[in-house]
Length: 197
Image 1 (tube, one colour):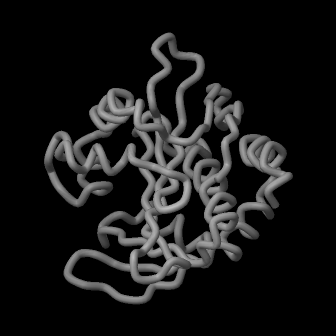
Image 2: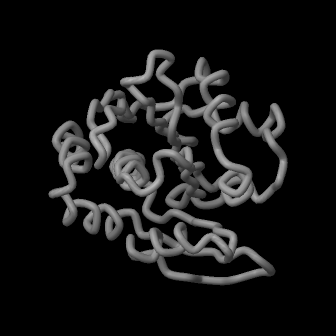
């Protein structure tokens, strides 16, 4: 388990803090989900509900760093330091080397490199926990997410109804992100995590 706090900045200079998600983050998690647009919330949770159920929220913050790895991004410059993004890997009960992957970024921070930074931290953590493959389920209409996972090297394995499933190799995706270390935020992430690589 990685217990680091990473201070960095997005491409527009916004200061952020990346850290593992804790059980005490329930309010911050709820507020972050409320900040998602209706479309982003639907694309993340596959549901038009304004707020996921209490059980879903509890699962999102119940991260132990082994069975469930979860990292969040906090807007450091803002007085109340709101959550602006989160990434999760939940280990498959039948295959300990595989986990289900998800990521969500508050709309105002899309396109600024935050998803890649969070994914980089998660991938390093997954590798330490011997998770080799991430299963990614994406609504077929979510072109941005499909582009991102394809760029990371994910292979499409099946499509059912409106959901497309991809398999993402942890080492391959990590190598792809490390090749982009010229991005200031990624450079900071990999500098802090160098001892884990």
